[in-house]
Amino acid sequence: METDNTKKCDILIKAGKLLTKSGNVIGSQEIAITGNRIIAVGNDLPFNADKSFSFPDDLLIPGLVDLHFHPGPSSWKYAVEPDDWTLTAGTTTVLSQGDAGINNWDLYKKTIVAKSKTRVLMAISISNYGDEFETINYTNSDEIDVNRSIEIINKDSDLIWGISFNAALGSCNANNPEIIMDKILQVAKETNKPILYGIRREPFDWSIKNQIELLRPGDVVTYCFYPGKGGILNQNQIEPSILDAREKGILFDVGHGMSSFDFKVAETCIKEGFHPDTISTDFYKRHVSNNLDHSMPTLISKMIAVGMPHNEAIHKSTVVPAQILNQNIEYGTIESGKLADLTIIKWNTDLKPLIDVSGNIKHSEYYESIFTIKEGVIINQDL
Image (cartoon, rainbow, N blue to C red):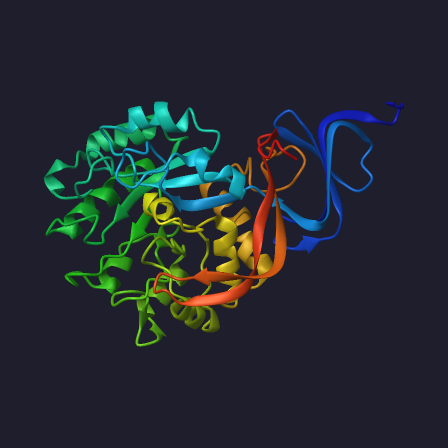
């Protein structure tokens, strides 16, 4: 029964631990939610809730934020329907790496961004069709319309976070990637948008140093633990230009994918003090067809297995990427007044095989998501 000192809320959650905005983990906390927002955080909250949940042994974190994902129509080259692979695994926000281009952005906006329960933001390709078809994304610099790209990005600036350019041969087979990059930089400057960048390796026609020097503070380099020639490690030493870039304010993202995460590379970088700024999956349809466990909690577990502290790995999968994507910080932190994007993760002490792209295995304890709320809506309806 409601007393004079008791208020109503829709949902009340009690968790054994909570991740703070600064990345610390504190003890038992309660969170009250009404509508799509958190209305109180603390202990012994004076609320009478329609629904109450208790997780005394588990950790409450903001909804996971995947800075490199491939959401889209399942008929597109890399894309998966986002809601099928995100929310039940604890991810509430994803950034598309160039799945849409200038000519199909409006279709993408209507069919994916507007209709998905997952929050979908775009790092748009300024090619015509992005990765809709089986063709290579960037093939001809003459096809890029700088003025039209600026117009479209400015029109939907709240949904288009930035510009994607994966300069790797599989996404850019043009013989003049520098000219494409020059046009991307023009668009980025005029729209005040960051670039999500994939380093060009084969055919080794453009040095890492020359590529990285073009990037600006706030731009994000993905695939940072790629194991082959042309990655950020050269004979087990971090490329000096990479260290210079970090000093300059350029950010580095994991972007695991099917070829860009190697335990040895990651361990070497972590030991050298080079930690990624953000952790992301680069989840796309080959992970589905190969039946691979490629969730954010699994990738967090891999980073812990190579030496990253628990709190840091979780912080760089929630608060940090949310701040990169969302300067207003409407989500990504557990504070009163913020959107109620929340995930409960559990540390499982059973040993699970964690596998890198080279087939190396670490048998490790691991995190799993057991409960998710997206803007006040409970995803795990069976609880």
